Image 1 (spheres, one colour):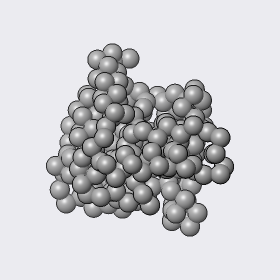
Image 2 (tube, rainbow, N blue to C red):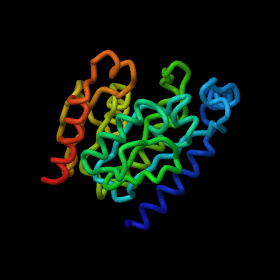
Image 3 (cartoon, rainbow, N blue to C red):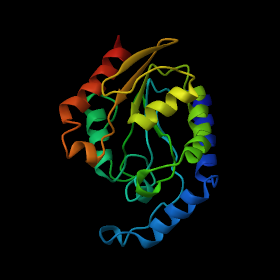
Image 4 (cartoon, rainbow, N blue to C red):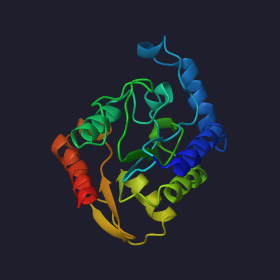
Length: 226
C-alpha cells in the first residue's frame, strides 16, 4: 500500500464531503435525502457529496458522471445501490478488479484491487444534467486525484461522453473523439479507454450490451498485464 497516496486521497475525500461550491446541487441532494422514494423510505440517505474509493495504488482509474439520486446519494458510495453499480461491480469482479460481484452498500465489504473509482461530479444533479459551471467546480477534485494516482495509473476508463470530454479538458488532450471502445495512448505509458455509461437508458435499450461492457474491462486488464 502506498501510504502517502492513501493519506492524500483520504484528505481529499474529506474535503469533497464538506464541499458546498454548487448551491443547486447541495440543495438538491439534501432535498432528495429528505423526500426519498417509497422503496427506500426507511433508509437514511447519505445526501452529501460523495468521496471516491478504491486502491491507492490503482492501475485502473474509472471515471463516471455523477452519483445517482437514489443510488450513491443514498448509500454514500459511488456506483453502489443501483443498476449501474451492479454492472460495474460484476464486470470488475469478473476481470479481477474486485473481490465480490455486487455493490449494495458502503458496508458490504467490497474491496477494489488495482482500481479506483471516481466521477466528474460528486453530487447527484437534477435529471442527470450538470451545468458547465458545476463540472468546472468539481474538476479540481478529479485533477487532484489524477496527480495523486499518476505514478501507478496505466488505464483511465471514462464512462460516457461528459466524463471523456472532462478528462480530456483537465488533461489538455485535444482532438480526441468519444465513441464506445475508443482506445488512445496518451503518453507516459497511459491509455485512455472510453465506454458508454452503464445507465438503464443504455443497458435497457441495448445500446450497451453486456458483451460490449465486459470487453472494455477485459481490454483494460490486458493493457495492465502487458
